Image (cartoon, rainbow, N blue to C red; front, top):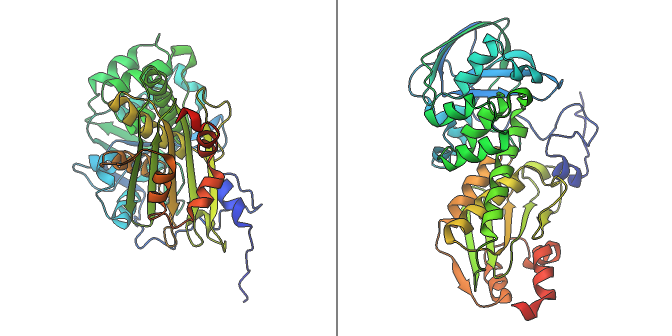
Length: 409
């Protein structure tokens, strides 16, 4: 039998990223599992284990969607499976394999049920708020299928199956979350900020939001995981950006770089008021340029007053924006920020926006190179970038702005 040759314009993949099916196919030909060396196999209908805790909320069928309590088929201290601070320390294949051990039990729910949750949803909510792994016993109606999650926005997760019965024990709610959970007069956005200020990470906050555990009682809703992650990143970064605008601007050009397996992250902090851009260049043979023959570059930006539309580049825009805002808050400064990422051949498995957020954070923890002018900073970066620096300059809104206002610099 002849193999069907799929010819897809590479620019469609970069814009779609496996979410919009712009190619017209009913599946994503890029988002395949053959690149993974190990997928966790589990047979049987009864499973027990320690959930980190982990809850996934789907989006298909909205407003009736799948809510998935998730656990590996073993007990113990599984907290690392949901600890973003540990993931960069892991080998990528080990990380993906460990995440794919999280088996998802599917329970169908109406998103509006969070305003008056039944016992089933209450158990899920309390599990999502736990500060320690929760022991779960679950019976599913059929063997777990192969619908693993590999997504540009969501952290990898294992296969699913409809739940027949489920029980939980040993959850202990984090006191910081408990107060927000029971405050039914607190808006969700205010709850997100409150939890962030109390030291919770974005993963913990987005999990609480996705299970309908935040917000005014009448407005509480179950939120698909991909939306809740972006909502947490955007809400927190909005607050930080508002705050940093009260600070004076930096007085020199600071250049940061970070090399990882198959990636290069670059950042320039420029003197001036807050502006921001996030750009990505996908090389042929990388995740979203699997079928291309040339580098595809995408970039989104905002000026001092932000943006009114959702960035086409996706949730990584807000995860990188959060990391940049955190850096400036720590410096007690504001700046014009340019962040660029290059993704090289062979890096072809989606990992979720956490990968961008945590790598940009790590990049900003490094010691920057300092320059008195933009051209020197760009010349320095040209020694790192595999994309011709002129290609980045051509796409960059911030560079156009700076060059047109040279008197201010």
